[in-house]
Amino acid sequence: MHKKQGKQTIVFEKSPCIIGSYSVVGPKEGKGNFAKYFNEIIDNDLYGCNSYEKAERKFLIRAINMAIASAKLENEEIDALICGDLMNQIISSSFAARHLQIPFLGVFGACSTMVESLILGACMIEGGFCEHIACATGSHFSSAEKQFRYPLELGTQRPPTSQWTVTGAGCSVIASKGSDIAITKATIGKVTDWNVSDVNNMGGVMAPAAMETLKAFFEDTHTKPSDYDLIITGDLGKLGSEVLMDLMEYNGFNLRTNYNDCGQMIFNNKQKVFQGGSGCGCIATVLNSYIIERFKKGTLNNCIAVATGALLSTLSSQQGDSIPAVAHLVLLERRKNDF
Amino acid sequence: MDIKERDDRYNAYLTSKMPKTKAFPSLFHAFWIGGLICCLGELIKDLLLLAFPDMSLNVASTFESVIIIVLASFLTGVGIYDRIGAYAGAGSIIPISGFSNSITSPALEFKREGLIFGLCAKMFIIAGPVIVTGVVASFVAGIIYIFI
Image 1 (tube, one colour):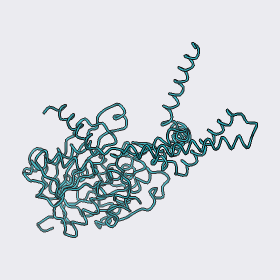
Image 2 (image 1 turned 120 degrees about the vertical axis):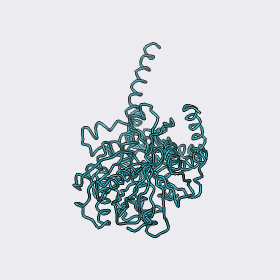
Image 3 (image 1 turned 180 degrees about the vertical axis):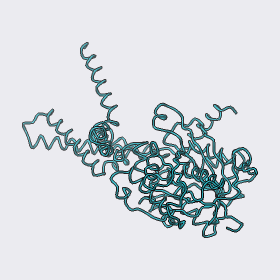
Image 4 (image 1 turned 135 degrees about the vertical axis):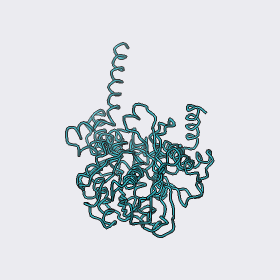
């Protein structure tokens, strides 16, 4: 029984499936392109808390609780919560887990966390170690700005390559049976660094990582981009996704017909976000709303989701290091056999 | 292709692909907002001299700076100065009002981490280098002044 295909790709024979999902976003995202898909839009980004860090936590708790409810389960029936975020020491996730009292595995993959947690969760379901797993992540614009950039009220100009961290959280509950949206394959990405050190151009930093992972997946599975209905990346933004298409073309894969980027799609052009959205919450909210909705409606039968993360800290970039990035991939497919 | 060559080629490609800030509109925005702030300063000084005829020019200039600082700090607090800054760039950073904004904004941002280690300690994270540069420059100027 070989559950590995090629060099980096895992094949899930029992196909763990997504039985519950929920997305909750802040006011700006609620005015964007996916407004009608998000499960819940909170009109105050402090969410009734007295700090943005606490609000981020509350977004996460809300998404996890409601995703579990949408799977018609109780919190006690969840065997593990796999969760991560952008804050130092992933405080949002661990503090949310403190509140939820679900066995907790904290992961960090920067903005690739959603897919990383889905891969780990799917492995645990496939192995028969767990029945139900909640995979979640979230981010908050204001807490990310505070940690990585400048104070909110500082009168600076954002460079044209910058992106806007998504305020919101998404959670998927996965199980061995109960739905026809299955996770059938996954590719674990390598940390890729092409010596870009511009902290204001995350798309350019992460595009090579996305390319490496996609290339590995297509080579491992002997498929090509046109074999799939939709290919999405997490938060490369407009510039980053153009770069990815160029890089893939250079490697002999044509992404130009069925590819899009969550960061590019989530906000509309009037929202002054330059290259689009970013952050853990970007793919987490889009995957758990728009993508799942399209599966349910039947307009999508398979989808490659690649989440990209820039693995930097403010210290590493201040010390002049270039920015490493990682990209993880899952293949979501409509399960053909009975469920 | 070795790794260094690949990285260099990629970085060159990325630079060519990056959207550039349009120089002329940016300069124009900076010029008129910056000019407006300076005109406002001059107006305050003239009004002070008009209201208090005995006031010396030096004292009036000091009061002018203080008023601009308080005004910018207030506008930061009510969430207007960052919008001016996003529009004007250097036009609202270079005048003393920008310095005021760079102290008030971290103070607001970090007030939740407490009065001492939050507000007071983090207040200078942006403006700190300006103060250090100012002190070093005046030290150097002082040394030169001894010899001339």
